[in-house]
Length: 253
Image (tube, rainbow, N blue to C red):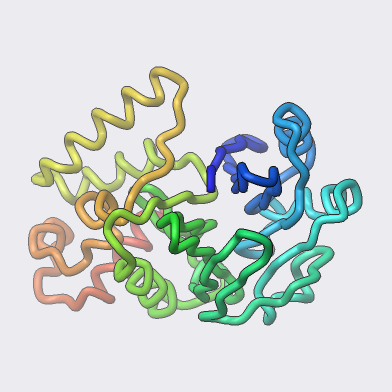
């Protein structure tokens, strides 16, 4: 399967997952319809499935018009079916969704919202994380708890290191500025920031990242690191307490 990034709104990313053999296409989190339609028409593709990670408007804004135009099926989490516009297929945690040649595991990752899920296309090692895990960051906690978000990130950490991370926004540069503030000794992060700046200078997205990259550089996945704890002046804290402190600091960064 081929993955194409479709920029939407100010800094959102939607994604087209394309079966090149039969030209069938899934779109993940269509923020708005126009960029999706333009992409599909330019590439002579038919939209078959709309996959929503959560209900926020900047991830579902294109659902209704795209469903009507292409007769596409809308997928979302079963407990969020009242909040996902035009939902057709209600997915459960740990379910394997298979249609045509598409195949993905549904993973419930509450925290940002209670009904947030990610889609893990395990054969291709592609993970669509919405607003839970970003490159060098994680989502704000709007509906869940610190424990829920921490546990959701722990689930993601256990996936294969080569798994590609396709997240919902281009936040990487700002996230990197926060990470380096409390992880100054991290040489991997210093190198990563140089890569990020080079990509952005050339008008390229910083996405996808990988699990391996995030484990080395994303401060929210490194809350057991003693150097980070010392920089926060909470050297004896648990990983959950460290994570919670980082999330509070990032909210006001």
